[in-house]
Amino acid sequence: MIVTSVHKDTEALSMAITAELSVPAARAWQLWADPRQLERWWGPPTWPATVLDHDLVPGGRVSYVMTGPDGDRAGGMWHVDEVDPPSLLVLRDQFANDDGTPNEAMPTTVMRVTIAESPAGSTMTVTSTFPSLEAMEQLVGMGMEEGMLAAMSQIEAVLAD
Image (cartoon, rainbow, N blue to C red; front, side, top):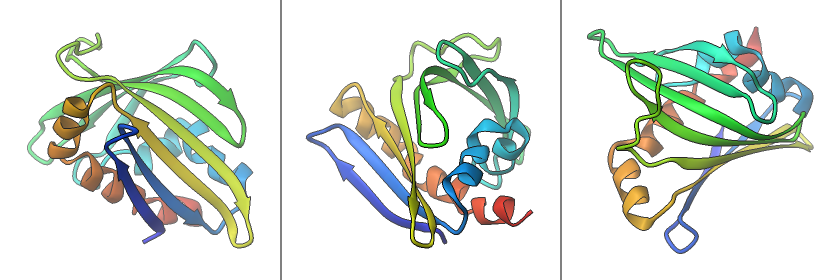
């Protein structure tokens, strides 16, 4: 697996997952910038994502639906706050209702993606910041960490193509 560390910080209300990639930062950026590549790794293997909208510019939105093995669907959306290819992406990450509207009953996190050149290629860190300790405990308890690790384990196959 390419993930080298997972760091949860309850004081900072954050969870950071770092992965070492064997490609330059510009190629790693395409994992986020290209909706077809994003579909191939975002979401655990048994819950693949279908990207519905992909406007990766400040003020834009990315929306997707993950479909489980029994046909269950879970929607999500990112409100794009910052984009600085190929090194920075800042998104507000929300759950979505079946009709594509934000699910206000679930917490919104801020997801900060940094990609930096490294001797072996690049380092990508995805840091989620939670609005409260209760929100952090809720989402981690729902399997957020395991889901992200499973999703990120698919990146190598995408990069190999």
